[in-house]
Length: 58
Image: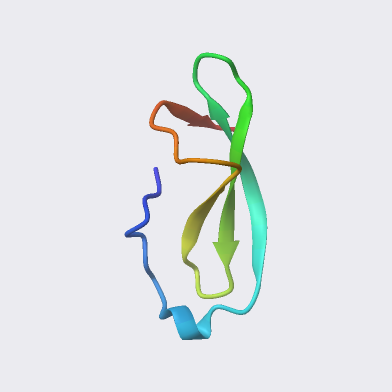
């Protein structure tokens, strides 16, 4: 899934983002972030706290 390196447009072109999925901890199923798609097509995660490694997207 997406990483911090998923860049499909320059940062200066990003104006709007819409949440497309929730990011859940794989074990607890707690929401740890949200997956957003920017107007540039870039997909990025906004974490609630620190970045988690074992996640699922729902």
